[in-house]
Amino acid sequence: MGILLKSLQCNPSKKNLRMLVMSKEGGRIQGVSFFEDETDRPFVVFTDVGPCSVGGLLSQKDAEGKERPLRFESRTLNTPERNYSQFKKEVLVVLRCLDTFKHYIYDRRFVLRVNPTAVASVLQKDFSLTDPTIARWLIRIRLYDSNVERISGTKNAVADGLSRIPIEAKRPISVAALTMVEPRRTDHFLVNLYEGKYRTIGLHLSGEESPDSEIRRQAAQYCLRARHLFRRPVGAGMPLRVICDPEEKQSIVAKLHDGVVGGHEKVDRPYWWEGQYKDVEKYCETCEDCQKRSLIRYKEPLHPSYPTRPGEKVHIDLVKMLKGVGNMNYVVNIRDDLTGFVDGKPIRIKAAREVKNFVLEYLSRHGCVSKIVMDRGAEFLVVEVQSVFKKAGARVSIAIAYHPQPNAPVERGHQSLIASLSKWCRGKDSD
Image (cartoon, rainbow, N blue to C red; front, side):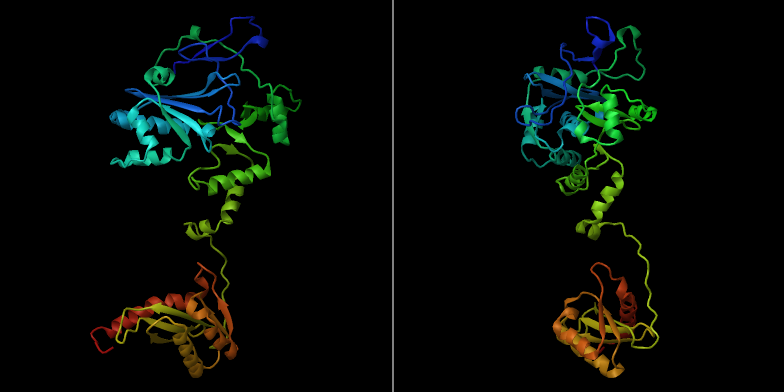
């Protein structure tokens, strides 16, 4: 990675040991991220690509105005990626670095500095590209709020160096080049943002030793970064910031669900708290669009009815047919829930007047009914049709939207009705 760990040339006591991250230019101490000022101290992302690897740097100015590195990124390209064109490699490294640094730069304005002029022009303007892979990458890149700047290769030395050092599978490591140092403890911890055991763990990590052995054991799963408490990942990955405030939890879930990348960014990538999955599931259950368009259908308990006589409960619906003689385009039919008897009538248009006339004919032939079930079709809900049911003393039950199951007896009979009429009318032009 081109990074050397060195200790200070001073008193070798434990109190004075510090961890320094030195870049190739030398003399640069790793900075601490600051999230409060996007205007004067924005995050800056440098990217570059080499023949067989890619590299990137995340930096930010400190309080004195000096630019400090925050994080480095480098990885080798696999065999298919090495065969990419230079332009495609440059777009790939930009996407790779933005995804790696997204915990710092997501939903905030930052500066993106690239070397190639073509890549800078494409990111600054909306060009139509013929390569679908690059087009998909650019869509993901434009989800970030970046100010693209083109810089020369001499000003991009760190990213350029990280992209040109091949990482060998078996490289000998010199023990003499490594120095064992003690990691620096965080001087401050935002105690007011945490409560319960997380506050105790944070204070323990900041230097206040806890007498509780359980807290000391659990503290190994956490770390402090920029005065915040983070949970270490189980495998490889970024530490997850611990959230305790209920309002902040609700705000994070709402932002990632309703924002510009809603549904694509997972909450469990940058944040962590107990009961996270249940909170996300509960919020999604309150979203009307999620309930309408989700492929997941929860099975609800059935509530069957047991009619004891004909006419106690009937179902009415309207089905569209192939155009027949006389422009009869629809069939309105009623099915008895006990006997399964079906009575229907072809109609030309889906109008309330046609439905009203059929209901009056049905009641005159079969008598009044106790209960009638229907869907939310406009031809059934008008006052003209509802007044007929009211005069007949029938209780009206309307199925809820997007749930046709209550009207299943007549809905399931549509296929049989259409098939039977089609077979019976085949070859009979007069019918």
